[in-house]
Amino acid sequence: MESNRKKIILVDDNITNLTIGKNILSEKYDVFTVPSGEKLLKILEKTIPDLILLDIEMPEMNGYEVINRIKSKESTASIPVIFLTAKGDPGSELEGLSLGAIDYIAKPFSPPLLAKRIEVHLLVESQKTELKNYNDNLQLMVKEKTKTVQELQNAVLKTMAELVECRDDITGGHIERTTSYLKILVGALLKQNVYREEVSSWDIDFFIQSAQLHDVGKIAIKDDILLKPSKLSEQEFAEMKNHTVFGMKVIQKIGESTTERTFLHHAEILAGSHHEKWNGTGYPLGLSGENIPLQGRLMAIADVYDALTNERPYKPAFSHEEAVRIIRNDSGTHFDPNLVNVFLAYEKAFESVSRKQR
Image (cartoon, rainbow, N blue to C red; front, top):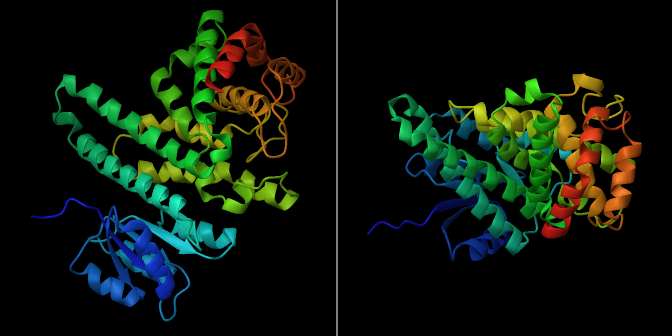
């Protein structure tokens, strides 16, 4: 009887890494260890795994050369590849992601982190495949199937959001809380006729669900920066800023796997614009005023309120009253004054969510 276990190929020229990796993963998956890129390519002529863990630094053929070969062939191009690296060079990590890798994992392995990252990525790939199958046949589906498609899309968003939080466990619950804050703000805009015409043109359910991906670019930030238990240096903060650009690239990459991209439209905007500031001093593009997408201006308030009212490695949690004071004072500099007025009218609803979900 054929096994239903997922197949993972672990490629590394170091026998110790192969042994450790197999010991961590073999309880749940069928793990095949391979000592070189050349041998991997031969195996792929006969066997297609569910996931490849690929070392970058190998003799004769390094990981970049191997992934280029994998992605150039139609039969292997869709295999998800995660790079294994001992490097701390963000340029190398970005190069790997640009070549088609879905993530990278630092060596030496952290067993719980390795197992969790593999579990989440395999779930994402499974759901992406199901989603693509649904979308390829969307015109043949009858009307009652629409709800099923939407639920599947929501599952992809939720799973990607969980991937971010399993890396950035310091801010656990951040995604759930900021999503709740956005619901409050959007409902308030409609009630108070603020930017009502633009908001009414959105599929609001998709907008709220897409907010779960606003920090997805953090999967490309090094662990020693993402999890640093103190304030970041200027250079480290400059790298952290890149999570906005990485986030847009990740979402664009997801979009390449589906013919239905509507549900990712807001996600890409949110990922790229939620750190822009009303006065033009934000990042990554230094947009100002209403040149900043409304989605990003809304997320800026939700994101900052949550950061202020929760503990971070470099600061204690501020009180709700102090967070409200800071946001009020930053009206017209950091935040859209119209949105700050709406926030101030509904700040008690924010406080209620903060206390309930903390």
